[in-house]
Image (cartoon, rainbow, N blue to C red):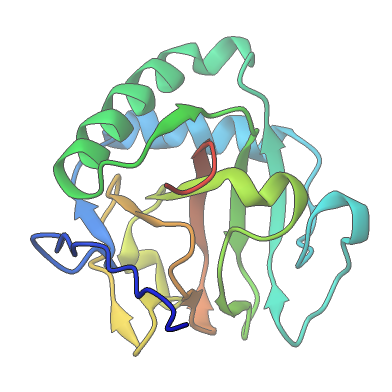
Length: 198
């Protein structure tokens, strides 16, 4: 007996969803400094390349320093309200993901030594990483303060840099930070998640 072939009617997304959406001047210089002050006040450690269960330092893949900013930090309550509204807006404009929460701490990231970098990777993965849907990266200092250290999506496509700029993209998108040549690059990284992709 011949097997029936089940065909699902295709629905084509109106544009390529695999890109980094950049919005300049999301944060003011004063707001960026407030986040930097908090990030610098917290314990800063060498960044790892995986989740907490099997995290490890691997300078071949990633070399930078991070501290973690909790959502209940008293000096940054204004930030969580502001980022929440922005994520909803950018998601509705571009992807329409079923977002339900943003429960991870914010990652304050510093690239300060020559050759600090983060090779191509995705931000979702097993266990708790599996629910990440959007990655958010915010530039906290002026690009004139560093050379190299470009945020790129796969194919070496540069995201425009700018003080206070916000970059939003699907967490499954391959991306990297190119090796730092000089200066110091500071950013804030967050993730918004939801249920299984559907």
